[in-house]
Picture 1: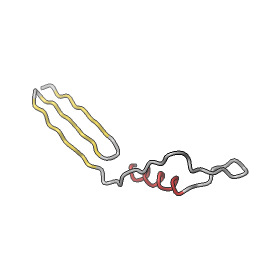
Picture 2 (picture 1 turned 135 degrees about the vertical axis):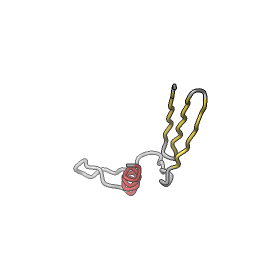
Picture 3 (picture 1 turned 180 degrees about the vertical axis):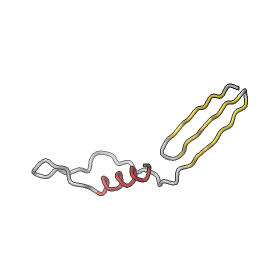
Picture 4 (picture 1 turned 180 degrees about the horizontal axis):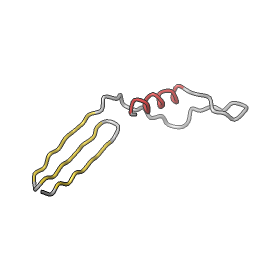
Length: 69
């Protein structure tokens, strides 16, 4: 018995394709995470000491990363 497996993953879903002796099985796993928001440019401002302030964009990105984990 020969089995080959292919996997495709992104933020919204995972697709698994399993080929076993000429038969194929396709599975879709949908993520329950909300859509990741992308921003153009940088909204970071620098303090006089050169440290970046935490913006609401940073907080949303951190929450999204934690949800994915």
